[in-house]
Amino acid sequence: MSDAENPLLLLVDDEPAQRRLTIAMASRAGWRTITASIAEEALALLATGEGARLSAVITEDGPQGLEAAALIGEIGGGRPQLSVWC
Image (cartoon, rainbow, N blue to C red):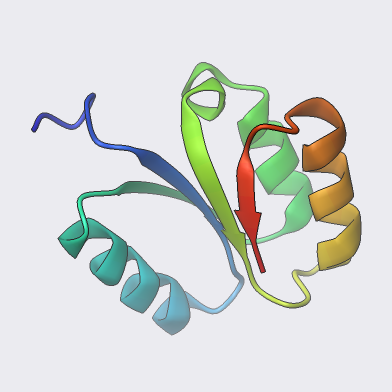
């Protein structure tokens, strides 16, 4: 499966070690991953061409900036079909 065919995950986490671990696990499961350290960065990524191809979002409990619940609400308001896990 080429990169373009693999599902795309947005990971929102400000901890570099946790990001590396999650990216490695997602990669083994066939996912490509893009990352954001803060919620505002994640929302900006959603507005890009790559963000339009997202299959899922994983966010830590409390990303810096917006709270996780606010981030989930923002995503749900614009992309209700996008799976979001916290």
